[in-house]
Image (cartoon, rainbow, N blue to C red; front, side, top):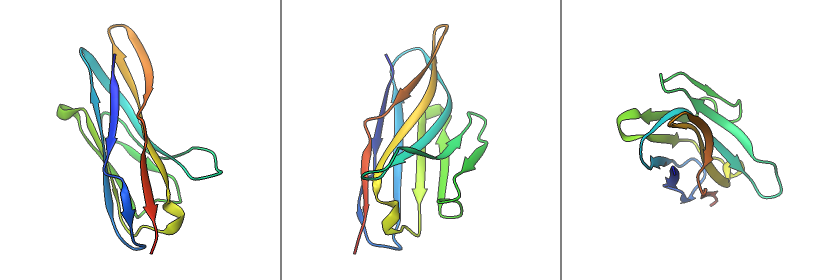
Length: 119
């Protein structure tokens, strides 16, 4: 079984920064595409950024130029550097990953971490 655990959320003032981490743990697995999603109160969960195991990235327009996704494959860890945060970035942030264990490729979710942007 593979687990994804996020950390790094919290309360920050508008214009501030936060760095989220997502660590995959388990045994005998390989992580492929990784993603960050977020879900604001009363809204649907949305994909905001993705990174391949080769390092290719893409971003939603809402975070482009402010957020940077990265990963350390040796540590099976993904990061999200969030700068110039806005109140509308307030949401629960989830990591998501495609993970191969044995012959099976499955999709996993983390438990989520709250990010609140408020003065």
